[in-house]
Length: 358
Ligand SMILES: Cc1ncc(COP(=O)(O)O)c(C=O)c1O
Image 1 (spheres, rainbow, N blue to C red):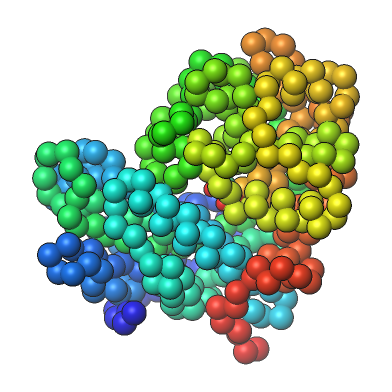
Image 2: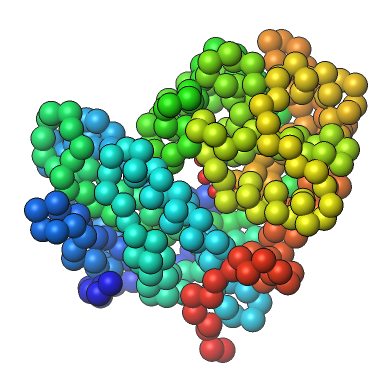
């Protein structure tokens, strides 16, 4: 793919102090256009970060043909800037686009575009403990047409944001509200995709949880409201001694890159991983009788987020005395160690983008 480069007239000041999450954007963005009548993808370019002009009739604004991804670039102490399993994001993006009747971005185009942008923005990859460059690829329908059909034109865009440690005070358990009214996904729907609509539909339950003093929602399945699925925008894992239970990837749950990596680590360490539909009653019972020893959510942003308390229909259960469990901590340390290049990467998960010469 030939990528044109348009130089910015001025560059932004790099931030100093706490970065937060997703508030600051870098100097450049990647854009490619898709037009069915021009043979598909064309005009790949890296241009100064700025507004995108759209027709008010653009189909994304009406029928929400939009998908996205999220991954990070990490700076190792040896000055290497690396990505973590970007091919998994590329494949998930293709699956999302397929479900939303959108054209696919080929895997090599997706990864080459990210690497080209991150290389241009290498000085934006932060180097403090726990910091990284969050990368947000996304695609949306631009065709100007107020009629429901798959659009014939799209934009594929990548923006980057330097982000701080998700938990500046370290990993700490959170309180989770088990949602028994609203649902996130149903079989045959779009639960396995990262489409914007999934997130718009989840906000109401998140607001409800926060009003009750809880940090996030634990989603139950959309048909029976009985089986445990995801926690907020993370996959959920439940530790019963040497067995870890997590919802299967069969259409309603997002196939998380972190989830897959943790399953690999757990199996490698000799744990049993059960991917199955677990009833909420089994989970609450385990939390109360102590068989549930640890619970946590997994995702790119926070990596691992321990669950300290569950509230289901007014009934509360505390997990592991509201403390971060040993296995949770070990998984967090190992995975972040691989991502930041401090721990050997036995699975070949990291990909070098550029090596900074001091
Ligand atoms: C709904 C949902 N589940 C799970 C995840 C975790 O996926 P990953 O580990 O690839 O970040 C995310 C975040 O991307 C998400 O939005």
